[in-house]
Amino acid sequence: MTPGDGAAEPPARNYADGKPTWPKVAVVVAVLALAFVAARACQQDQVRIAKDEAIAIAEERVDFEPVNRQVRFLRQGLDRRPFWFVSLSIPAEPGSEQEFSRLVVVRVDATNGEVEDLSERTPQGGGGKNGAGKQGGGS
Image (tube, rainbow, N blue to C red):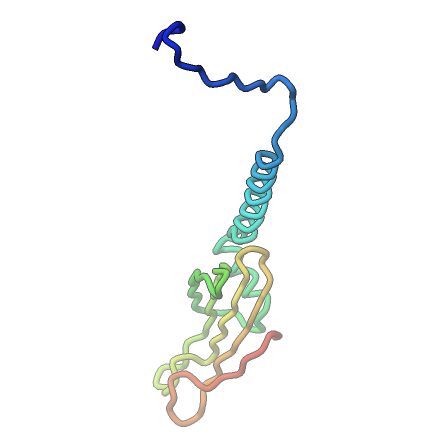
């Protein structure tokens, strides 16, 4: 196509007037808002408490010196919130029918270090390995 063959060229757009179109502005604002919400959501789910810190937090909440420590990291709930589950225990005496003389499981929020739950399993007389136990948030 040459300038003289009769074909019309499309009109040139004039962007020099400096007027933004409202749909473009709305899209930019929506993208920024979405990025802000996503950043906040990701930041809340970051693990800020290390495994050793979770053990120390759990040990502060019990009234005995544990012999065994077992730690598990799990995400719970629909929002997949991260938690450290710290099991602190004292083995039962040899020949006993119970596995533990004391067993406490402490659920520590991995984002802020707060103790969300503390449950103690107490041995039952008569032969169960894990007693029914008590559940509660305090020590």
